[in-house]
Length: 102
View 1 (tube, rainbow, N blue to C red):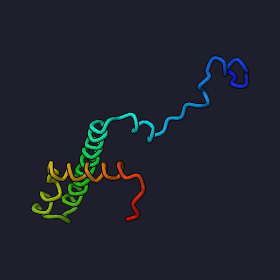
View 2 (cartoon, rainbow, N blue to C red; view 1 turned 180 degrees about the vertical axis):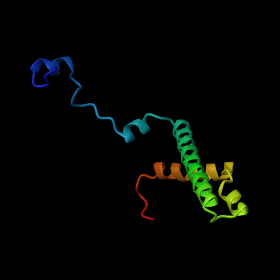
View 3 (cartoon, rainbow, N blue to C red; view 1 turned 90 degrees about the vertical axis):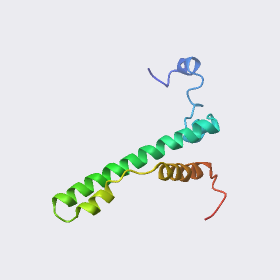
View 4 (cartoon, one colour; view 1 turned 90 degrees about the horizontal axis):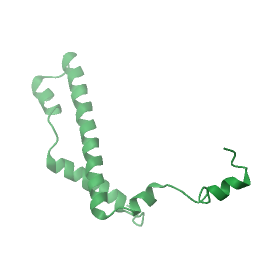
């Protein structure tokens, strides 16, 4: 479809006015939904960190550069408290409107 065609704008009057930004999407969510999303993001982040730690520890163990006690420490799963702390950290970043200069 040719957008230079004058009839195109008659068919699609909002073509130039629709913008989809993260800020607009977040504004349409209630506080519960935002906190839930932050918890999901935090869990995804913590899961990825855990898998990276396990992979690193396995490689170090195979190379003989890590003892079993240290290996077990690296593959320890994160706690609910750590997950909640990360979610709060992410939520505080989202809720901060840039007013503070820390």
